[in-house]
Length: 514
Image (tube, rainbow, N blue to C red; front, top):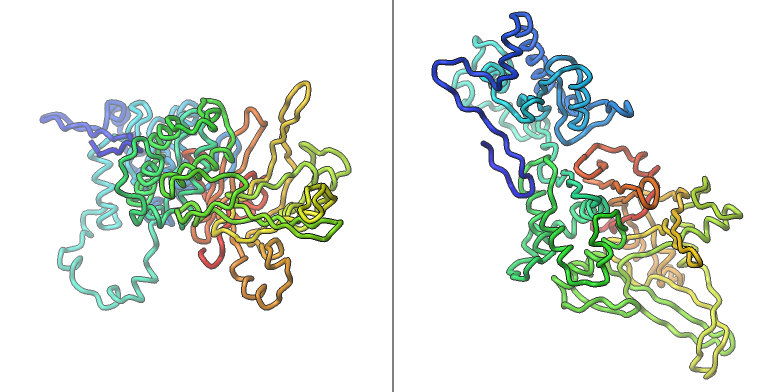
């Protein structure tokens, strides 16, 4: 039996041999082989063809499938299954559907070429198929006459041993050290899964946890310890099985933070609220232990502050005496309202409408335009009319942005509505126009800051469906390639898929660190 970890508990059983009787992978395979010689011959030929597909062609071929429900062609990083009895390749979810429709019960794992029996619901060992697999791995052929001698295998080859040849003929393992694994849904926990994926593919957090940044901790149910375990499990070994975030969930549900009690249910919750909770909890475990106060200029050197926290400056100018007051406060993320801008662009309320806007327009509305207000002026010693403008005094290394798609209406019948208006967002974002220094117009200093204010898109969280019955999915970038994460499913994504998504949360990383 193969080993299993608590995060990936499934183990594969291998049936022991019994002396004096032919050995089969399982009784179901025995029945298949004992039907007639033609069925046995056809099955072996199909398995050989599958081995050629897996080992002789690019790995993407055996990982590319057409979904049965939508007929979409997708490339998945989790194992696909090649049917032993027909040319079909199916996903794990479609395996039962295909079996019921075609009465085909045997499949081959696209990554290991192991044989799977649907009736056993397990990987089975069959000596005939295993001999073929080992021959294919060892000699690239199914014939015994072409086995290479030991001295041929280990004798030096000046051409093949050269660094140039090795670099040109070596490909990186599909998932190793990339953290490309899905996370199982533990019951309406997709809102947690998408935030965890954004943390896992954040290079600053990854480097911190993989370098033992959080160690020597004896706090029970510590979420930072659970995050450390999660990073180790994702990046230490090549594994594409789904991850069960049991330690994260237990630490979250046992947390003493009463402000987030509403998240501890089996109902779908808000991914943004969970992001705030997780960030503040990790700050308390890794920082000075003080809770960040909203509206204050809290300073801390923990990994969360180094990653996500920036500072806003609000400048209020009295219209009577022209006195100026500046207030500085820390921020974890930027929340950009959509409803007012949607109404302005559409001329009416467009909740669920077809209007469109850009991320830059949303930022302009909050951090460029002036607002009129009343405030108590110290110079005039009275309440005066004033103009207020907010700008970003210090940008964070990772800029997190919430597009406020959920609006709660107060009144006789309190209700919530979702704003489906598309918001176009770029792969590269220039934040200089929204900074305090950039607003001042200092050309020399602005030029120096230009590089520090350029951000690249790192991950996107999307809410699909209605406000009460929806689902969260996410996109994360690894190098130059994008991947779609839907709970335990991981698929290759195109840039167009990402840019056409109706984003709810956006995470940008400053280019100098990317």
